[in-house]
Amino acid sequence: MPSQDVRSGSTCVVGLQWGDEAKGKIVDLLTSDHHYVVRYNGGANAGHTIVKDGKTFKLSLLPTGILSPHICAVIGNGLVVNPVRFLEEVKNLRDAGISVGSNLVLSDHAHLIFPYHMEEERLFEQGSSQAIGTTGRGIGPCYEDKVSRSNGIRVGDLLYPDHLRQRLQAVVARKNLLLHGLASDAKQFDADALCGDYLGYADQMKPHIQDTVRLLNNAIKQGKRLLFEGAQGSLLDVDHGTYPYVTSSNSSVAGIWSGSGVPAKHLSRIIGVIKAYTSRVGRGPFPTELDDGPTGIGETIRKIGREYGTVTGRPRRCGWLDLVAVRYSATLGGVDEVTIMLLDVLSALDELKVCVAYELDGQRIDDFPGDAFLLERCKPIYETLPGWRTDISAVRKPSDLPANARRYVDRVAALLQLPVSIVSVGPDRAQTILMR
Ligand code: IMP
Image (cartoon, rainbow, N blue to C red; front, side, top):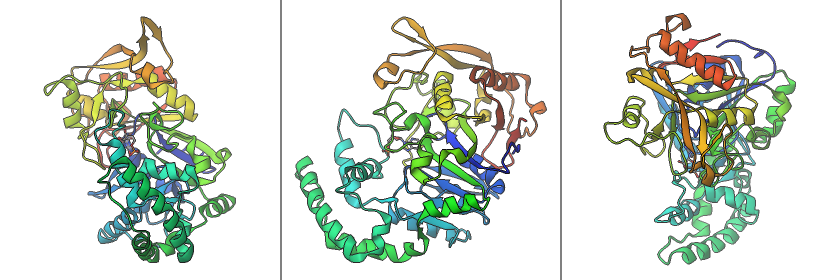
């Protein structure tokens, strides 16, 4: 990984599309230059697949940095945590020979997901014409409870059994009424049983729970370097994404300060990650989507790129690279450089398109519209580039890329007016081309 001021300050790796940009691989490549890897948003709705030493690891909640022994992996206050998933991922890692102890820290201010959150989400999503197409992990309802204040329960509450019990008794009574109001056959919950279950989880989680704001700011004072790992992509950010078809957290760079307690002034390098094309799971506008049937280019990309959700297994919607959308996210995030992932997937195609502007109601627009209903009406304006039709998965140097692949990368950089620092040509750590 090229070093550009990585010796000082902190780095952020953030997705510039609708998630699944293969950020985990970039985080993994950067860990050797850092001491802490910090997640600041979301929960077990994220899906990070990392191939390391020939083994494939799938993480949803834990930071990918946990795979490197020198890293302290931190789950920041901005996350929503399902203890069952947390303990399951810890167990899976230990079973695979990864040591998990004081190298995993969980914020006492992260919020807890309870089974009633999943039920609430199910009732909202099921059969609704307004469904978002969520991951079903209780993420939205848990964030709703956080913001409501009356219903939120935090990780730190697990350390005070009487307080937790009282809190659950009040919250569960309200939840049961709400759920029954939504559907007469909705599941009902028992506060004491939930309290018993969660105190059981607490016993195993206790060694990891800490005030992570103090931990991280002290680490900075001691000259340690932090690597922030964004989950989902910037276009799914609840404030800045394609609302309402977004997740419930600030998944762009904007979430770092609130979701970790680390002031933004400590960020010295912001790396935006994009795929060489675009994918999206769940509902919402997607101007460059290739909905061209079972033998079309969309399906070809899906098959070659194995574009199926890590969390839900859903087929991802696939389409051409949308540079209007990426330009918007890169500006929003103050991105310094871009990495292009999965370029090898495009090797099968004769020609490639990149979206350079939209047509909205007969007018050309160069800026990403702020509203999903307007984006829905946008038609992509494409630039067409020649394909390379050669396997590039073994290429390791920029000079070994076929001319048309190099042309594609250079054109993306020019249209974004940002340097491309890395091109990835396969899931393995070695399948990486440092461009600078
Ligand atoms: P939620 O985060 O489960 O509430 O889902 C809200 C929207 O974000 C849905 O369209 C999901 O498919 C999408 N989403 C959530 N997490 C991810 C992710 O890690 N990658 C891609 N899409 C995601």
